[in-house]
Amino acid sequence: MNALFLTLLVAAGYTTAQAQASHLGGTDPSRTLYREANTPAASLRTRAATNQHSTEFLNKGTYEAGYLRPLDGRRVLVLGLRYHVGQRVVQVQDSMQADSTHYWPLAAVRGFDLGTEDDIPPAGSPGAAPGVRRYRARLVQEGRQGTRREAVEVLTSIDSGPLLLAWLPVAAAPAGLTQVLVAGPGTVTTEPLRPLELTEAAVLRLCGSRATEVRTFATGRHLRFDQPTEVAKILDYYNRVAVAK
Image (cartoon, rainbow, N blue to C red; front, side):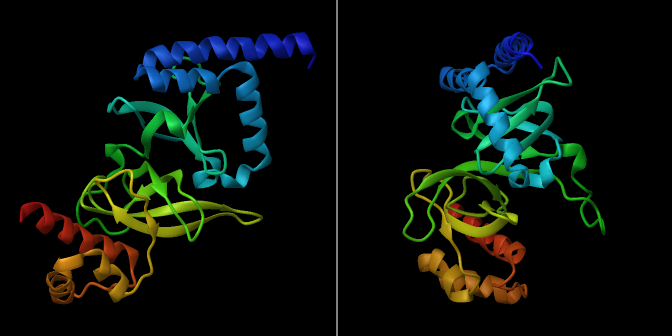
């Protein structure tokens, strides 16, 4: 591929990126960050970096229908998207050109959803496919490392309750990706989520003065403190009583 053809190709991609930014709309910060990420030079750098570390895509790099959530609070249905953990970027298939994709840096979005409502199984359906997986941009902190903004998969039933439980995908060469369970305040977005040990003591410590009430709820429903999905139910209960009382 000669240099002139490559220049024309990336320039055409940038023009399409500008059209998609207008189509998706969004706040000025979202649009600015989006356009900066899709300049010819920036998009080439991102494509090279993601291709070099292809194992760091969620879902093995498969595009899924889902929703993009710009900073203005909207939820935009897109034909296909995938997320690269190492580069912290959402790659979205163009709605006007099926063979073209564009980049949304994590700083330009509140998050994204993989899957649509059509994927949610009926209640009690055995062996049904999982429904929408909600990824939200949140501050996280591991050990003595500083805080950083990451896309975490929310496990609690709401994204912004008093407590939030989530999986943090972490790039771990050469394996690709691993996951760390994190928890913390869901309403105070300036407070980072931190790794959570799956023990009764650690979970109840999050619940503060309601620890005894939460333990009674968990015991009565035979919920285990060493299972993430059951801890999510425990924290869902805490969120309900914390808001109601």
